[in-house]
Amino acid sequence: MSVMNPSTKIPLQVFDSSQDYAIVERRLPHWSQAGAISFITWRTFDSLPKEVLDKWLADRDQWLLSHGVSPSDDWRRQAQSLNPSLRHEFHCRISERWNEALDSCFGGCVLRRPELSQIVADSLLYFDGERYELTDFVIMPNHVHLLVTFPDDASMLRQCDSWKHYTATQINRQLKRKGHFWQADGFDHLVRSLEQFDYLRKYIADNPFRSHLQPGEYIHWSKAL
Image (cartoon, rainbow, N blue to C red):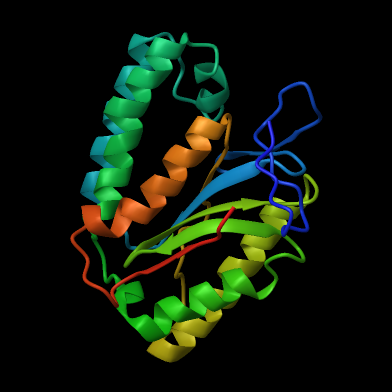
């Protein structure tokens, strides 16, 4: 299914399991497919305190084990075999709690500063329509969500690494510090339906309001399709 806009240079479509796709194993598995829309999240290195992260991981592992899924490196692939109602339950009870924790704005939240969030926005938009096609993004105080498609399977991780390296260098320079800025691995999900695409666009747009942010404390961008 396509959401093609005549003004876009790279076709936009949802994931099609009958077409070729790639899975790259890092700390997390990363699925990519040429032209398919990806929902991508990065978070700052200090965005989740250890106690919050440990509690979430323990609850996740307990839920997975109770439904016959080993909480190993490939648990996401195993979970795909669960029936739709259980996958929905996991999303509501576990995945949403992850997003709620991010929206609580733990950590230094330096992206609340307009001059720093603008570095990320400018980087995302720099090659839009050439190397990739963005539809939406939001830059929150301690994380970023974006919807984007790439022309081939190999582009996603390469471009994400480029975005994160460049923005981390520039932001650390502004802060006069060195070291980690982003968490090492991001989360990405291939959009499966037009309904999910519409839901994620609204999720991105509503994200600042769920965190009770004021204008100037975030950047939201959306392309007319």
